Amino acid sequence: MKRQEYKERIIDKKVDEYLAAFGAVCIEGPKWCGKTWTSSYHCNSEIYIGDPAGNFQNRHLAEIAPELVLEGETPRLIDEWQEVPPLWDAVRYKVDETHQRGQFILTGSATPNHKGILHSGAGRIGRLRMRPMSLYESGDSSGCVSLEKLCSGEITPSMTGTVDLRELIKLIIRGGWPGSLGLLLEQAALLPSEYLNAVIDDDVYRIDGVRRDTSKMRLLLRSLARNESTTVSNKTLVRDIKAIDDEDIDADTVASYLDILKRLFITDNQPPFASNIRSSVRVKQSEKRHLADPSLACALLKATPDGLLNDLETLGFLFEALCERDLRIYAESFGGSLYHYQDYKNNEIDAVIEMPDGNWCAFEIKLGANQIDAAAASLLKIQKQTAESPGSKPPSVLCVICGMANAAYKRPDGVFVAPPTALKN
Image 1 (cartoon, rainbow, N blue to C red):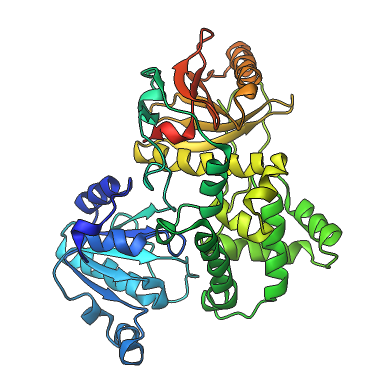
Image 2: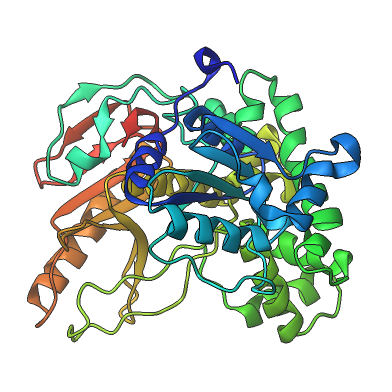
C-alpha cells in the first residue's frame, strides 16, 4: 500500500503495543471499517485469503498447506483468516515454535464457530476490536477536547463554533465508513445499504454454512434500527416485528439471529454498569442496543435529512448512537470501557466510562443546547444518590455531550459540557 495515503486511526497505537506484546494480533470488526488498510500499514508482507485470483488459489493453499501461507517477512498480514479456520491453530503453533513477538496480523470480519480450531490462542494471539471511524478520525471533529483528560477532570475552555443541525444529520447518515469520505451524501448513503445486503445475502450463510430465512433477518434488523439506543428485550423485538411488520417470528429465532449478527460484528451493544457490586442500589442488567454504526440504522429506516428533521425523537436516538460509538473508540484507546446505567429508581445515564483505576465518569447525551440544564441536574442527582448509598462509588466526572453546543467548558456546578465535534481520544 502507499503509506503516504494512509489516514491514521486511533487503534494504530494499540496495534503497535500488541505487536510488541504478542506473537500475533487479530484485528476484528465489521467489513469495510478499515481493518485491512490499517493492518497493511503495520505489516511487511501480506496474503489475502479471499482474493479470487487464480480461482481462489490463496484459499486453496491455506486449506492444503496452511504453514506455507505463513511464510513471509514479519509482521505478516493474513487477511480474512476465518475463511480457513485452521489458520488460527497454524499461527498459534508458529508463535509457540519461534517464541518471537509481532509475527502475524490476522484480520476477521466474522467470528467462526470453533469447528477446526483446537486452541484459543490465549497468551499468543491478542485480539483488538476495530470500529468505523470516529468523527475525529474522519476529520469531522476539531479534537480540541481530549476525552482522556476530561475523564481526569481537565478541560481547556474554548469556543468550538456553531454546529449546524443538518451537518450532524449528514454525519449520522454517512457514518464512519472510510470508503464514504469525500462522497456526496446521496452516494455515501448507498454504502450502508449495500453493506447490509452483502452481509445478509452472503456472509450470514458463509459464517457456518447454514441457510437462514433472510427475509426474517431483514425484519429483525429493521426492528433493531427502530429500537436503536434503547434497552428493549428480545421479547419486545418479537412483538415489534409482529406489530409493525405483521410477520410471525419466535423468540428462539430472534435469539439465534442476534447471535449471528453479533458474530458478524453488525451489532455492538453497550453493557450495563454497576458502580459497586456491594451497592444497595439495584441496577438493571439490560444491554443497550446498537448497530455497528448509526448509518446502518438510517439505511434500514430509509432515513433522509428532511425526514430526520421532522422526527426529532428518532434523530435523538441516532445522535446518541453516534456519540456512544465515538466515546467507545476514544475510551478504549486509553484503557477505558463504555457502559450505560439504569436503576430501579428510574435513574439513567446514557454513557458511563470506567477508567483503568476504577473511577468512573457519567455522560448525558443531548442534541439541543436547551437540554443542558436538565441533563446536568440529572447527573448531579445520580451523583448524590450514589455518594449516599453504602458500598457505592460516585462518578468522579460529570459531562453533558451536546450536539448544538458552541463551546467546551465547565459549568459552575462542576458539570462539563462538550460537543462531539470537538472530542478526540
